[in-house]
Length: 216
Length: 224
Image 1 (cartoon, chains in turn yellow, cyan):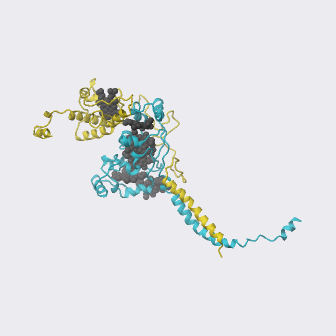
Image 2 (cartoon, rainbow over the protein chains, first blue to last red):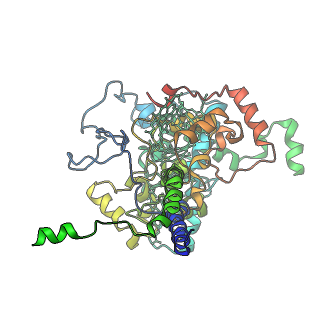
Image 3 (cartoon, chains in turn purple, cyan):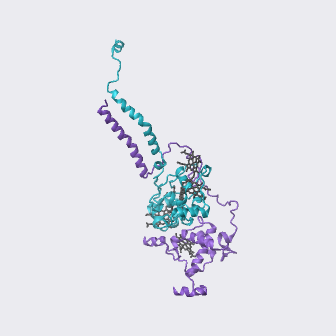
């Protein structure tokens, strides 16, 4: 005969055995700030460094070593003044060091939208969302991004605009360290196109299409 | 004498009620293996272990504000994501481009300013971390048109980044075997809220055809 208390033991064991599942269910739904437990460490963490990891051997703790100052990697000697600095015979270059075709223009637009539009706005009037937010927050330290359609900025040679992107200007931060040289020229080309588009006269439209534009 | 006393005692006999325990022990021993297997299965599954990890960061940086409200493109900060395996976490200079002027005295940004002055990097804590024997490449996925959202979820709504995918081998392979429903035109990969009227499966199948996308499933793809 099975006694009553054995039934009770069974029931309480049954209930207790559900407890780990409740904890697991919670772990599945809740966020945790604790790193996972590696029950079997396998070779999950090997004795080598991956990008952007910490290495205390160096004073600045970067495992990725920045190049030693004053050194040039092979093939990285940036001799071409026009391409790398936007300068030709000591003056800001007016042209482009590469062919500007539709593909470059599209690339330029994409990069402009990513890197410049937050401040300068999609059309370049200096009304990007970050500029507007800074205004709304009444940040005293904030300098309004220039409109790219003022006479001054329109008169800048492309080498100057390229340099502005690379090194920043006055209160604008530099972008040289995270936008590649080709992309910076593509953005420069797109900025030039934007400037033309916002200051076009009716004479710039091919004759056959003028009527079309004037109607609108 | 004590020894004599012991020998005259009755030997230990299991009390009668122990008999009643026998079915109980039988049931418990019978169920135990099943129980342990199910427990380990659920407890050690990557769904339990990996999803939801959200470490506290040294700076309360919010993607919901920067990528969501301000609408900054992911590539404004994670600028290497399209061209290299590693999606770089931005250096201090990227933050300071705006924060020398915006919230320039905010207490929350103190570690960023300190880093800018000293040249020591901000110690961001890694969220997603594959085992070191796995090779993963961001650029291969982005150029094929796999959006961040397929693997990282709606980061643009997260105050603090948390992991939403298992990042297990099964999870990688699920997509490598059938990527079509999770592909999109490559120029839209950073638009996390992108949606289309078109059937995703059909669109994906067309993109795979057009761009010759064929994720491999042999071991050396990810273990090299």
